[in-house]
Length: 107
Image (spheres, rainbow, N blue to C red):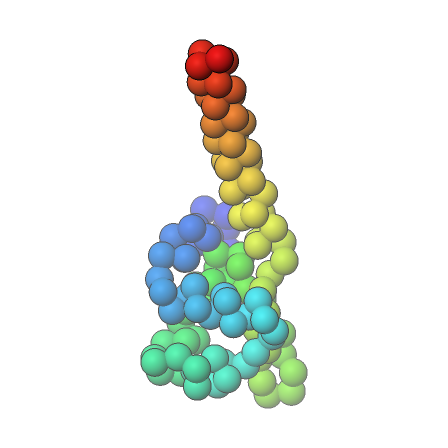
């Protein structure tokens, strides 16, 4: 799959069920059936959500006999974390500078 065809991880998180799946996988790796038992959607729907999360680089799977075991893709999750820290880091710095300027004007 080319990089252009890869699903945007932030777009992938736009669905409540996919966010729930990620939360469950953050706890521990799971099979599709186990995820489906905990969600109000069908097993095929869970599989579709997992495929999209995998295309977004947030989930990986591995074969274990005839079963597929899903877990978070540490690289994808870290890339999102780094991006958010970059954005929030800049915002936090601007907020601190603004707060310092307000304090100086009021003293």
